[in-house]
Length: 99
Length: 467
Image: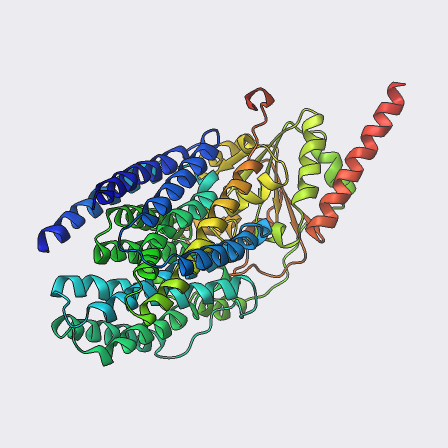
């Protein structure tokens, strides 16, 4: 039990450093789409909620899980949608670059 | 039995895709690929989870996924000016999900929860519930259904910190006695109240920092949920989101010249009262749209400084016409964007990109500040405090030390403004009284429209003369 928690701590630390290094390089130009994208990725919490609903251990846990899936799924859909809409607006003044 | 390693591999691929997704966000050229990577990762993760062998009931999963999608689509289609409140709302949803799952897990496992596990669960639930109500408050303030000005009262910080301390104390008690189910609702409820109180004293101008901070909390609470559920994927996604929010909060508070604690406990509004006292009439130079247009057409380098006032006046499309008109005449036009120009990090860039202004003409504060001495005209539209030279020169100014755009170093400064009223922070701006500053009084949208018309008129005359 403790060893899995220690493992988790290692993963958390490494992911934190990766996040820090990757995100530091992102230009302020894209900070708003970045925030909506990380929001959508964060909604991966939906997997925990799905298991909670699916296992249906008690009615109470299944109810909370259902609400949780709804909340997380709306972030997944809304987050990716708006990030893509924003990024489509960013155009360069050199039209040659456009596909 | 055999599906479990397969699911883990799927999660591994999803984690890699999430990291790539953020990596590709680093430049506008690859950013859309980043969204694709994130989407594929998400679909894989959800698909893999559905194969989980403990799942016996698919009906409610399907119903919840469909309802979530139905709610998500309108949230993805909001106007670009509404993106900050949408983002705050999605932090609230994320935190809501995390809090619900944490609560359900506690009641399923109590009293057999090891100390360390219970500690993580407490973090998850406390962070989740305060982020939930805090984000709802922030969204309400941004949507202007709640008053935007800071609401303060005596002893506010003591009340707030006291509440948080009580919640933490209950958490500690629960770690030691994980069977005390009756205390758990208090550990959810008190941070819910704290979240409201935390955002009440924060004003509209500090929203970029608050949103970033709540973003970080939402990420950390999701990572804590990953610990509880022993889900590496969730820990990674939560850590990425947490560090992203943290970096953005640091950038935002630096741009406002404030520390985190200052934003949360400072209540900037109190400065307003003190600074309003000395109102004296100093001479300013005011010119018409016609004069402004004739100056603009005779110069080579123009830097436009947009502020949130421009977005409030819905002037971005008129500004694009001005940009087109000047660019056609061979004038080099760029936009200088202060980090806190909008209501969330990078918001102004999105608003200008929406108005079809090419992103390579949008410059960050650090990149453009050195260019102002070679700039013929700096045109300030709806920005105030971020152009105030007192931040550089006057140690008694409340914004002294705040990084600003050095528009006062340009040869000519034009300021479009409704009137001489002070800006959001209530601080007088010496820029307006400089001999090279021309004030253009009026609504930003109307005034820019008039300048564009004047420029067009001259163009037509010139075309006529050429015939």
